[in-house]
Image (cartoon, rainbow, N blue to C red; front, side):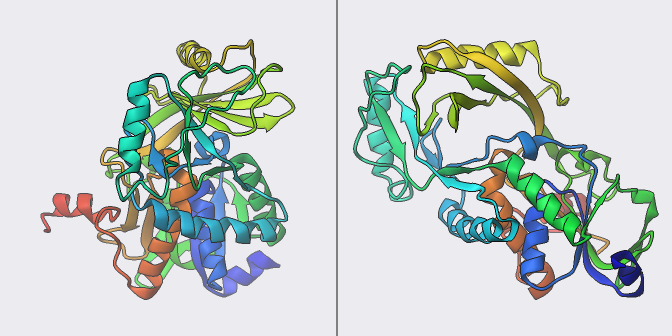
Length: 361
């Protein structure tokens, strides 16, 4: 009956892609009483296998994540709402500790914690806690306002929710079947006011937005079993170690800018194993080995906005490694831009690239 309905009446949004970007926009639209239909073909898996950590600090350089506080505030309410809707808890508040390897790293931590932008996120008290299976004579620094989202559970449960209300089609989107009109778009049996492309690395196959400079950064992750590792929080250095229960831990991730496949590699396996051994001192067994290509952008900002020629076509992409933090905020920004004509931040607006091609300032 639902598809009979949408052939008679125009829906508000077609959404192509159902990873973190796609479901963030779908949920934002639904919360604002808009009608949606989501397309998913499981061609991209970076959201599904993501670590799901949210962390307001770039620990490699001890610098603040762009607009971290605003993203965290919106994220909290967004995932709390989702918990109720899908009747599953997906957001887990859990400390992240940065393991120190020297006195110099301790000093760098204290210097960073004195910066006004970082002060809310970095504890000024070093932690000298003993975890079985880890040697850390220089202790740890605690990052505040951290946790992780179970992205696999979130996507699975939200897809079930969409299916229940016939808001999801599991098929590959055919760009050639899209008809663009002044007042909307048509796709096969559907009329919609707008279409939002949230395809992750799959954007390269999109004829409307494939000139945007979306790169792909391959990441590989493990699920390991370490019976002698007793850890109830997240350790993060060159990789993160996230406890899953029952002696299982998620570990990741690597960064490969050349390989654009989603197949695990021996090179990635060796790199992860070496990095794990830098952190823990006990034996471990690799249970699963995953890989995916993150949608990243050279200026480390998302790709959000409207097609320069077709005003009913929009894009939400480039969330990179911080999709669980960026997704809700970027979805809201795009929705507010479309519905309320609120300008996008220049740092995320695709005009920073499309204007260069068209010669506009």
